[in-house]
Image (tube, rainbow, N blue to C red; front, top):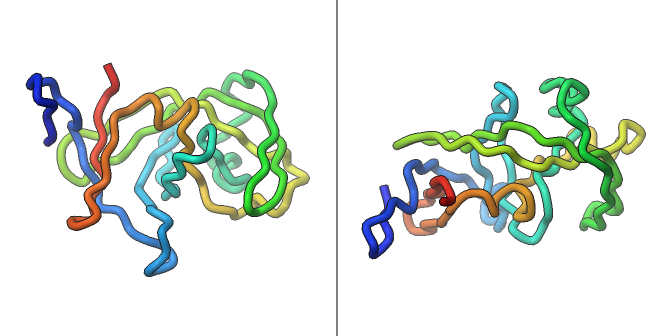
Length: 147
C-alpha cells in the first residue's frame, strides 16, 4: 500500500471514507468492535474510542475489562463513563484490515444523549496505536500497524 523511504511498510490497508453530512468535515470510516461492524468519525482531537450506548450494548461491553472511568467535555456536552479495553478493527476495502486494542469510553447508561451519538475514533489510546494517512483526492483512509 504505502511505504516509508526506508522501505518499511507504512500502511497495509485502505478504506474509502465518506463525509457526513455531505460537504461536512466529519470523516467516517468502517470499523469492527468485538465482531460488530459500525462506522466511526475520525477525531484526532478526542481521546479514546468513544462508543455510543447502542453499540456498547450490541458488543456486550460488560464482558470486557473495565479499566477505570473518565469524563470528557465535547460539543455535545459533558460525557462521563467507564473505560474498557476493546478489540478494534479498521476494516480494509483493499489490503489488510488492522486490529488493535483500543481504550474505549462508554457513557454511563443514564446519559441518553449518547444512546445513538456517533462513534468517535480518538487519538489517545486508539489512533495513536496505528499509522494512518488521509488521501482527500481519492477519499481513502490508509492505515497500518505501528511498530
